[in-house]
Length: 206
Image (cartoon, rainbow, N blue to C red; front, side, top):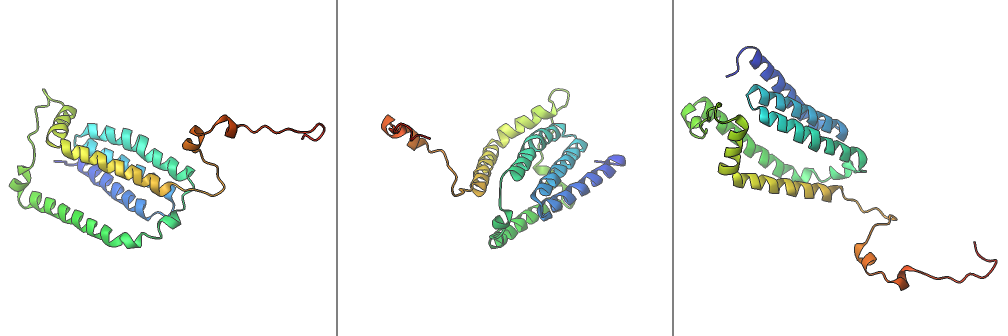
């Protein structure tokens, strides 16, 4: 349990993280949204440090802040993406998003009720903590992740793959009057089609 100064910092980081998450979806400028996302990641890493999960905190900073968020920032700044066009069809997916939000809210309520009003029920799904002298926090996390939850770990990888493909499809734009590379046309070329010999009369060349 967090007490005293640690609890004060916990609530401070939690408040900033929630406020940053709200700004991510409410900011009109996409660059500002990515910057608020990075701020939310930093505060989440601080919360992990307060709860003793230093490995997760470092992974969050190195992977998400150092790679994913920076990649988002570069994509938003460098690609000519028409975000107004992307947002036009957002309302038709609002019912599905609301349904997913209600499901997540129900899960959070169940977890809160089970831990607050029925501690024994909440402790039933908690794995025993190994001895820190014989097993480090990172090793214990790896044991649980790659044994008990290995299938969920693979499913998470598939979800990220689908998200990456979806991001490519959404941002890919074929502009007119722009020459693009065609591998089949290049492979099928012959000397007759690749080279054109033109006989120019003397004095009439450029």
